[in-house]
Image: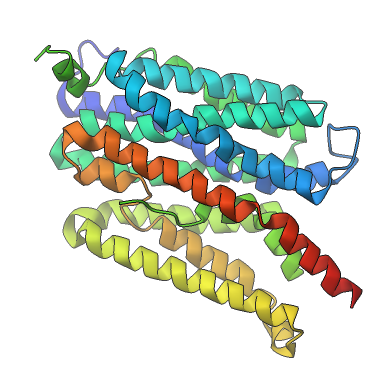
Length: 361
């Protein structure tokens, strides 16, 4: 594609195609926020039986199980067949996964669709960043990589807006549209110069972000929020988008290290305060009655901080590691992320049991 377009314009157009995949990534990460409440409601759920909390937790966390093999497979395959075929394969698998999710009428099919879509997203999570990192010139690489965060947040906004108005099937069908559009776009992009060179043609980060997003609806429910979940998440994602939008203008002037440290500090403090809130609620401290809106505020701060750094892991390795090591560094960063998230999410049934026990006292 773009046979008569060269230089920076060609790089930007190719990156724009990749950003469709980031929309899909943001949509997928946030999918359970909108869908879990629908699955809990017999009138809205496509399944014949009401799901238990353990089953709902698996619906969320099986995405991460699917994500884990993707980076391992692509670390080898992308050096053998090229970056472009791997991007296409990831989009194709994600497309099949979303088609399965859209048509799901049983829990087993729903699980299978989540694993498939996770496998596809695991591929995209690595290869999108590797591709942009390898085709972009040094003078625009930082901006192109940080725009990944903007488009990822935008994918969440698409989901929350659609989920507020549409049914389970139609909301999930948007994932089909995004994944198919991305897959077709991958047919038009050029192969990266690094892969041609390989053929002779001349630190781990576990922020808990995905776990927070997966179970945001449960967090609001535990906090007793009266605000609709989709509307609350729309507010949060809008602020997240603002953090992503500011980052490209600061990354080259302030430097990646300052942004990374600041982001980590903000995320850590907001999660500490959120944990403190639920601890005080658990022991029945009356101060909680005066700060019912605090979880929403803390999640806004957390998401803004998360998308404020050059981050959003694993963007940092793609931006600062030498070109030949980008794939390795990005792969290591990505595979640690879903592993950590699955550990967080496996505690969901335990948390629910504690909450249920408290309600009986």
